[in-house]
Image 1 (cartoon, rainbow, N blue to C red):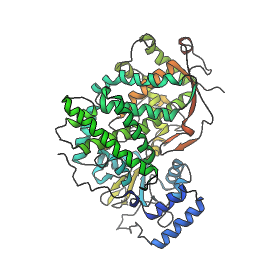
Image 2: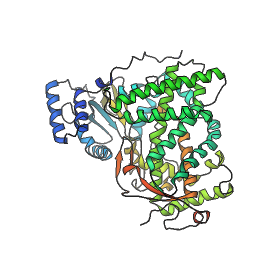
Image 3: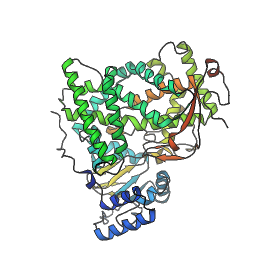
Length: 511
């Protein structure tokens, strides 16, 4: 049986995964205490606990990076959560430079905001920085999921996942993804919908297709969906396993989900067939994975495939709706394919999705602008020296993707949405929407395929306008337009969709 380099201990109760001060902070905010009372309570807890601070004295000529560690024990957590996190990190970088220290969520951290530093942590010296997640998250998804590991176990699992997402496999998924898109869009006609919530459903359905193929029984689909969304609601909730809480409900749903996955695997074994979907790759692997290993990795893939893709799709709709001329150009590109396919009488093909040059640039620019994954967490497994600074063992290390993507020295006028900047490839290590190195997202081509298919059907068949505010952002935890970008959609006639106009037809909001 395939096993990681080190034994995975059974998950401890999730309530002891966060420092007491951080638990007080979360309780205070969730129970409605004002920010000032929460701060005072945190200060009192810090004083009573007298916990040893994670500080290192200068060792020879090697010193800690510049920066502020904030309040004793509390650090700068409140400062981070009291404002736009992107403003927090940008202000720090402007003051201290591209490497600085801080203290967040009970952990001393080193922030890195340069392409060279991101490559150092994620590629050239990746063995010195292990992936790190709160243990409550590990318990929710499953400790065997590949992104909790590094080394031999991680690489073998990654190869299995990648084999199920190879171009030959994705090529065969195009008709099924297209069917999901059409089924989703049909009820939108004349309705106001929460764009982000609908995109989450869409990306989940594509995740189910990728994991189980197109032949999973409907009863299993519904059970998986019902329990997964309960887990999703509890994933970022306060991690206390008390009956009635979102976290407790999520843990119960996780148990039911594991049971359903076992039933599906047992039925697969009875049929004795060899499927090319992810479940088939895992079950028929020469690595002889256990049922727990398979289940954890399936749940991990579903989590990884959902919110990030849904967030980007939501932003794409907003960006092209805000740029009428760009929308018309995208429509023209897609209408040429639509006409070739007999105005929808024939299905899209993999080759056609590869020919969507402008649409591809729109996707890349949306990934840069939105920077859904603003940073990634790593932990130093040894004392590391970088550019004359000490990164102590045990400290969290966070390459700041968004800071890199919005650096004016790397991307001219970075706050402007400009897909033309991708007519030439970006410089190495400056564009990292899917991460980099051995832990880069293995499903990036699947995510792009979802976007190509959805954009094609949306701009050729529908027009829409955003309802309410269009400028505010909320974090949950990924950035999305306020309230999930409510928008009203109408089915457009063939005549309307082929008419080039700067008015609201085809998607521009009425002004």
